[in-house]
Structure formats: C-alpha cells, structure tokens
Image (cartoon, rainbow over all chains, first blue to last red; front, side):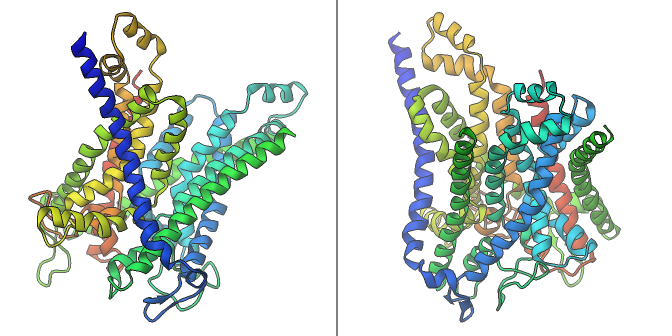
Length: 284
Length: 285
C-alpha cells in the first residue's frame, strides 16, 4: 500500500510539473517580448512610416496592411464559412456527400500554410491575374481560415436547442424562414466569436502571404486592394532575419512582435466582449 | 416551395465548394509539379540528397536531405510535446480543481494564439543564444532549436485533443477502478489512458501534422543549411523552409519553380496521410 502511495505522489507531481512547464513557457514568451519591446512603443512608432532603411521611424504601413488583409479575409471567409456550417448542421443528411465534406474540412485544416501560399500564387496571382496584392493575400488567407470558421459556426449552430426549430416549423414556417428567424439570430454571437478567433490567427500568419502580396518595404500606404502591402508578421520576419543591420533594428523587431501579439489579443478580447454583449442583449 | 429548393441548393453548393477547394489545391499542385519531371527523374527527386537547383553545370533536385531534416525536427518536437502535452492534459482532467481548470484552459488557448513568426523570432533571440552557450557552438540556430519551438507550437493541439479524449472516458470506468481499490494514479495510468488511447494517438498525429507543416518557425530558427543532417546540433533546412526561401526568387515556369511545387506536393501528401490516419483512428468504432 505504501509503495502505491509513493507512486501516486510522484505521478501527480509529475503532472503538476507538466502544467507548470507550460505556464513557464508562456511566461517566458511574454516576459521577454514585453520587457524588451514595451520601451520602444510610442505614439510615433505606431503612426509613422519607417525611415532610413527601416532603422528608424514607425510601423504604420505594416499595421494598416495587416488590417486591410484581415478585412478581405473576413469578407471572403465569414459568409462562406457560415453558409457551409448552415448546410452541414441544418440541411445535410448523413450521406456520403456529407461525410466527404466533413473529411475535406478536417483535411483542409491540416494543410500546411506554405502549401496555401503555393496555391495562392498559382490561382490568385497567376490564373486570376490579381497579381501580388492585398486581394490575393486576403483570399489565400481566407481559404486557410475556412475550416476554422466552418467549425466555429457549426459549434454555434449546435448549441441552439431543437425546440426553437420545431416551434417555428410547427407554426408553419418554411425551413429557410425557420433558420433565418429562429436559428441564426441566436447563433450569431457564437459564430462571430469563433470567426474572429479564426481571423486573429490569419492576421498572424506569414507563410501564405510571403509570395501573394507582402512587400519588404513600401514608401506609401496601399491605395487599393490591388496594391502590395506591408504586414506585421512579415515585417517581423524581415527585421529579425533579412535586414542589413539586424542587431541595430532588434528593438524595432521586439516592438513589432509586441504590436502583433497585441493586435491578436485585441481581436480575441473583442470577440469575447462582443459575445458577452450580444448574449446580454438577447436576454433582455 | 421553389424558393426553398433554390436556397437549399445554394447551401449545398456552398458545402460542396469545400471539397472543390481541397481537390483544387491537390490538382494545382500536381499540374505544377509534373513539368518538373521532364528534367528530373522521380528517383533522383525522391532519393537524391543534393538540392542545388542553381548549380552552374548540372543542377540537382534531390529532396532526401530536406525530408530527413523535416522528420528529424518533427520527431524532436514530438519527443518534447507528447509527454508534456499528455501530462498537462491529464493534470487538467484528473488533478486540477475546477477553479484551477478555469484559469489553466485559457493559458493553453493563449499559447495557441501566438503567431508562429513570433515563436520563430524568440528562437533567434532567446533559444538560439541559450543553445549556443550550452553546446559551445557559434550559433544556436539548428535542429534542436527548431524542435523546441515546434514543440511549443504543437503543444496546444496535443493538450486540448488529449484532454478531450481523457474527458470522454466514461465515469463508470473510473468508478470501477476505484471500487477495486485502485488509487488515482493507477486509475489514470491503467484505466483512463488505455481507454482514451485512440483519441490520444489522434492528438499526437495531429500535433505531428502541425509540426511537419509549420513554416516560419523552422525557417527562422533552424539555420537553413541545405546539407544532409547528421546530428541534432546541425543546422537543417526543412521542406517548408526550402519552399519559403526559394519561391520568392525563382523565375516562373522554370524547372526549379516546378520542383518547388513538387516539394509542396510531397508536403501535402505527408500531411494528408497523417490527417487521414488520425481520422481513421478516431472514427474506428
């Protein structure tokens, strides 16, 4: 009996240590970036163009570029993803087509991001002649976020009790009326939260935009969606590996990393607040 | 009634479009990879270990070195991420109080939301110098560095999927084990983990898929030497990194360009098989 207790003691503490290591990793990441990046952040840094071969000045074009691309991604991926989720959860029967669609979604979420980049180069840049542009990059990222938006939207639809649907049908509503009036309004908060989380991941991705539109340096902000753009993750990549004086711009790289993480968290926080707000509204 | 049919049809097309996207990726990769094999034999491509597409006299396109590099970095990552991930998942389901779990779960989610380029950056500025000091090499940008970073990237996947698997073990199993006098540790080790093994296996497979396909971290932290790796302390260049480095510089519609698509195709097939296997493991019952 005694021996078993000793095993249990060591076992349980080993598990606690695993969790401890995970927490430690996260703390190290945040401590390093915050302590070395926060000093550089200022209003000028966020609102000015880079100067002197990107060794001085701010990162405004990268922030603007990332926001524009994420917007395109959202415009493309959100309706597409929600539509697919509605089909899967409301219309689809358990047929081989449905199983095939589900399998495709799972496989899409496993496709490496660089492969999406290759796909984007061939399809959007070359075949559709969008060139290297915000549009090409946004659509490429949109395809990549598709599995996440679909899954999140479907989860939201699943939480709607069947009574809502049956009540509506019993009153003589058609299927689409039922979905539009009794399912979607209640599912939207959950859908939005999930899709914003997906978009925040897209905003931090680098590999798919490497060849579809991200630029090393641009002297002006993009004027239309057919222009190339600078992006925060790509800027961080350049500042830490490709720049001619890497050591000199290290503080800029740290600050860029901090802004990028900040942007991602701001989106996550926005999603959580939005969900809270919409739920409260619904209850009243 | 007709309107209803049209709407249903539209949603159906929307659903099928997902399959078209997947097939489209596959098809475009194949179409762009095939022209490469006009100049390269399949045998040289798969088993040649010299990748030197810009060589002046005879360019060579062997991917074996990168495949081995990719597998090496991935296996290193899994050696760290699997024990740590399953341990953390077991902590969350079996040790942590509900209150601690409420705090601990967002920690895993936050870890998942950190962009890969930021992790790669930390590989350069944090893990690299630390490894260099530890091994006495001049640079810490090598396979171990990549493995550590990829482990961090794969951890959230392994943790959350293993946790789901452990959490879905029927309560009766645990109770039966307790009734037979098993303590918590024995129950976890001899009842819960065996019962959840298919889910845990799938979690590890998907973590592996993530590690193989990850681009930015390995591109930034592995040193990118296109030679055949002999040790974990060698700088390596993975398949993803090769595509990321070279696609930007290569002229369109050359053998080199098509060869990069062939590399992408190999990557796609790798991850596709991993996903398919983990899919079969999960839906075995």
